[in-house]
Image 1 (cartoon, rainbow, N blue to C red):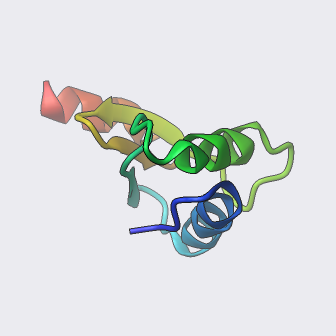
Image 2: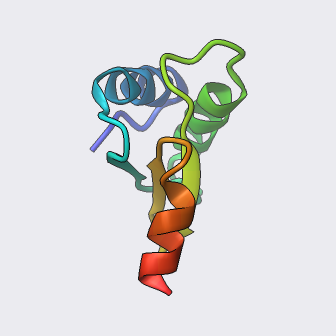
Image 3: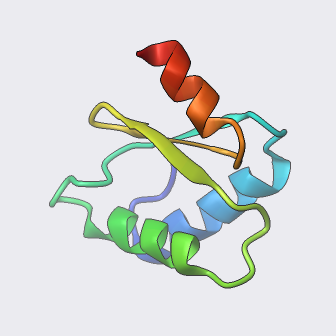
Length: 81
């Protein structure tokens, strides 16, 4: 579970992306929880960053957003469906 204010969410996503192996999965919780608007702001800052430590691609939303590295999202979607 990451910090729920914008800077903490941004830094936590950066940290997780740095150590994520290809095909690894990161879950973002509380993304659309209005009680924690910082999670959404930190997530969008990360996704819009021009030079992130690793690009991430969303592939599933179940109340939590699932992210993986490019090239794996399609395979995960096929496996789920």
